Image (cartoon, rainbow, N blue to C red; front, top):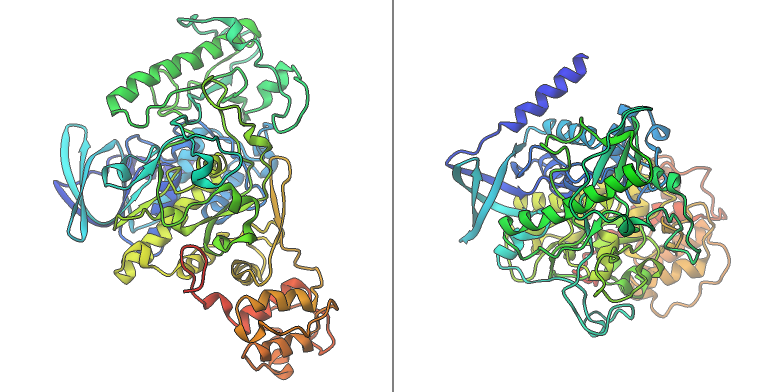
Length: 615
């Protein structure tokens, strides 16, 4: 009880943070959603004075305020702050099994619990301030800083910030700041993606006004009044639970459908795509007032689906949860926006890089990872091209740092779903753990930019990646080397050089990339990898397909320009936490090889540009 009271005190002390008539801060994060919260926490932990402004009284955006509290993907890649957030959920509910309540996800939770945890994480950072119920109104550039006009209630104020992160749901700030962007589907010619439509259009994904239901017990009747425009036929196919990524025939099972988003404590997240409560609206360029008006239709559509579940399917005992959201109608504070503006950034991630990462070098610049499949929702817009997105099979991937940096605008970093990716790739990068990772990367980039007094585009990519590795965040999507491994950082660094590559596997709804740390490596494989970094090895063809031995590794080091003796390795072996005993004839696995390369050659220190080429 005492812990709960302390948490409530922390939570409510943040709600009443006010901004003076003119406030100055180093970093201003606009939007306390999934990305914005993590950006603020990461930057503050790196010593940056940070202010988050958030329109609602909650943190977390789609994770919490939109009610999408079933994590999509990255179950085996608990990267950085996402992993920390999940650990708090495990502690609160009682472990992994306690949050594996629905079949759509390995991790489901009540939205208000997620909000409380995020506020507790934020409250622990003395360099972080949060102003709730605060709307930004305008932004303009003043020499080397930004001036942002905000509104708290009826009080108008200004904030001066050296750096701004746009973490809004729809990329509103970057648009107002003058960044160029795209909306909707790209053309095939523009992106080089064979799966893209021939002509570009402004069609975005359906959004959803999620509803959280609660089981009020046998005999309860929580049926809502029949909503305007209700037509049961609209939802008649909603019980089809067949996997859209498969070629299976429809499988009607209403009970199984309801278990899709089952949350702890007998609650249900209603975020159902098949003849459910998805709704098509493109309100990205609308004013706040226009958006609010248009969203009434989406909310009404969700209520019609709830009425169908209660009146037609018989789930009368499931009613709108009265203990989740602090709203009059008990619905989420915001809708689930699957797509927003997409900034034209210093790098753009296309499905070609995602599906075949090693054909180019963009993977070297990764700062966040994802494994969810390319998932688009277009059922409610009949004008949308018929593209079977979920059958575009890709492995897990990383997001390049350049996707967060807009071209032509200084002092601005873009996060949330507005990063520089193609429309197709947005179907994967929009998911919660990826957006959390994008936010953490944005915070790290901002902190280093401010510490060094340089623009975000001037920050060394490797320095951002190392800051993230220090925070146990993944920059490469290797699922078989967890962050707890003593060799995690070394393997991540060598993976990001491409000297040792991962093996990508498109797999169901949780795609994979394997490093295979225990696999014995061949001499030829290593020589091929080193050749990309060391000119002295370009014309070296003395490496066979035999297993790599420690003696041969040292010979390759010598050819690469670094002399290392067996005696040196013997002296460093235990310090490097390598299993076994060193010997000249010892056959080396990929993990040991990566650790030794990282320690002696330090190839990660060689800088790369936004395309991953050496600079």
